[in-house]
View 1: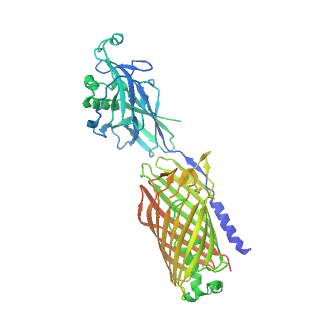
View 2: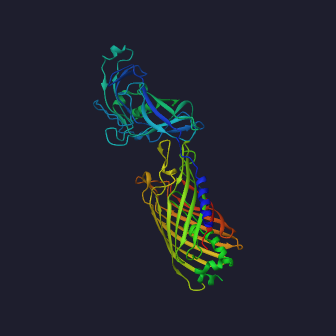
Length: 254
Length: 312
């Protein structure tokens, strides 16, 4: 009997020491959304706008593989762009051919066939808790099968070269050329300013970052003839414009 | 004296109250290489030592032990995607020697685990862990003076720890007290007795099978070399070198790059016979060298416990 006292005492101690509670604490998370903007008018298959030089453009294809790489702490974030790959390696970059519909692969931002203002899901980030002032985004090649495989974006404009200064109804009657798609292979990344610091962690709940892509700026300042011809410099300029068209804002989620 | 004792071990209870060497053997048992759980399936150190003892067994010896272990490890990059895991194990053990050559043992852990991610998230759970069944057999010993002894050991870790849930969701495997896996092990040991010195060495191989949540711990080989010195009849000092080399863990068949590799520790310890057959001990692992895969660090383990021999 004496010998049973110790095991009992040990078992009791073990039981008392074992009063832990199970718990799951969800991490800080920032949902990344993107929405398109820029249309003066639109249909189910086109977005119409004027570029900075005044010519009318009907955008028939606007697929961009925008990838959120990570959040930039306020101590290091600054508005900047830098090239990951050599822009000189951009395709025989532009491939001009007859316009046709390209279906957006999952996760690829569609500027045309999704209405302006409608949020598209680009995933989420779970960074370390802290204060962030920038979102690093990149145009990266699409992985997988399909026409966009290996391409960072594909755009298909109808360009009304003699429409500058004309009212929209008349502009639409001027000569134009349509081509698709201008697909680039090189990657490009940039830190997008969040406007105000985004605080994550510390029980503050989730956050949502909304990227606004203004496609009406994509063709600003470009040599459209060179672009249609697929000249590397023109496609590089288009790539830079596409990335520069992205702005960001953040908001708390429940 | 050691030689005579070595030959007379079946009658050891007669000597135990009177002979300093016998009184210190339990200390040796406690201080030589002890368990380290690098994770639910990892180990560094020979976990049979504390429970089964390294002294020469005698028929009918029944031993009860209680040990508390604390350890911490981390994977990932600090401040970016690091996951820091902390684990406290409270282990109740029972061993029985059928004779001088064959000993069996059972270890039942109660485990409290938690991890914290750099993202601010984390999980914690507590519950019954995976129990160990171990058998040890002496297969050879030197002639008188019987200072050398060697043998084999085998064991199996059983999936006795039920999966834990919280807030209606399953706790991640990294915070589960058990793994749901069956883990067989096989090894050998050697011991050398020459009071006040005592030396022990062992090598144990283990192969965890796939467990809960698609987790499959990597195969591991654990080597332990320990030296003890008895300061007096009641106090012993010990220093062990413990090393583990393991394969990467796999999750649903995919290798975890931040797992597996080689790690080694120097483990100083002290044992104190507080009264009769009651022995207290404490040990701390100090990392000395490693070549772990990917981004991971192991801080070593701190442990303390009590061992009591119940048989007369």
